[in-house]
Amino acid sequence: MIKSPICELLGIEYPVIQGGMAWIANAKLAAAVSNAGGLGLIAAMNSDGEQLREQIHMARKLTDKPFGVNLMLMSPYINEAVEVVCEEKIGVVTTGAGNPAQYIDKLHGAGVKVIPVVASVSLAKRMESLGAAAVVAEGCESGGHVGETTTMALVPQVADAVTIPVIAAGGIADGRGMAAALMLGASAVQMGTAFLVADECDVHDNYKEKVLKAKDIDTVVTGKTLGHPVRSLKNQMTREFVKLERTPDATAEQLEAMGAGALRRAVVEGDVKEGSVMCGQIAGMIKKPGSCAYIINNVCESAQNILTGAKKWVK
Ligand code: TUI
Image 1 (tube, rainbow, N blue to C red):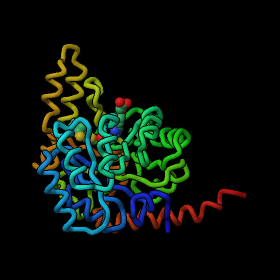
Image 2: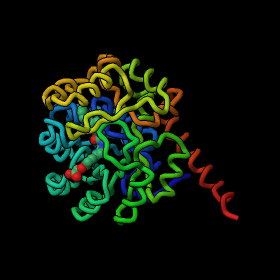
Image 3: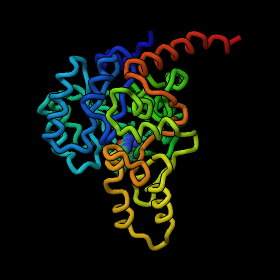
Image 4: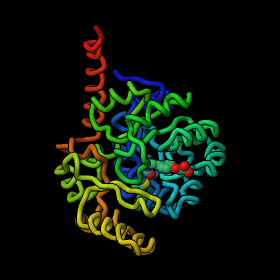
């Protein structure tokens, strides 16, 4: 059985955290991951305060296990979301796509543990100094908003720089990835792409199908020129976006307009041609759907077998 300090910190059975995928990570998915022994997260990105509260209440009906909320710092509802998280006495939040420094005192005051997602050593150190309970070191293999450094390079550097637990994310979807992450100095993994095809994930079937059909080189990062690079599966939308980004006189407004609503279009409407199918590079390895419990058990059991057999390398 794989155990780590993260299990005690979060009151969970397996050191597996579900990514806080915007528009996708709802109460149903979060509760399924938590019921399976991991830490489920509700994404606050696309909900105003009251919608988030509703999701939290729904998750509490579906599970009596701990779950958390992901605060996407670029969300127009970020202040409301922080307020609701504090009022509802959520045990833990992860934050993404920015620096959560301005919200940390308020969250701590309400007894909320804060686990920022970081893409650099400097932000990890800053978060530790502000009392973060752990950090998620997310490499640029992941889907959605990405930094510049790979998981392989980022995780050990963050692990060397901080004393709080490090959770590895980006490109992890099986026992090999989990075992490698633990060897790089992480004490847990966060997975997003792997849960896209979970039975309990409500993302549109067209989205799931596109993930299941994806190959290793099918993702692309767009939006660098706007300052928020996003990884998604290549489609008509990304081709048009790349073309516009390469046009010398394209304005930020034109690009923003093209991206606006694109994730919702893919997730809710199933428009995987004109919508944004955010997804990590590991999609090429994900070949069949399954329950959250199957995904978590499989990853942990396989990591355990790999780690137990690792002595074969040492003579
Ligand atoms: O947040 C994510 N991934 C996301 S958020 C999202 S929603 C969205 N929708 C439409 C357009 C754009 C985004 C989709 N995917 N992951 C966590 C994450 N945070 N990855 C990288 C970072 C990050 C990067 C730079 C965190 C902090 C940072 O620098 C902050 C600073 O001030 O240094």
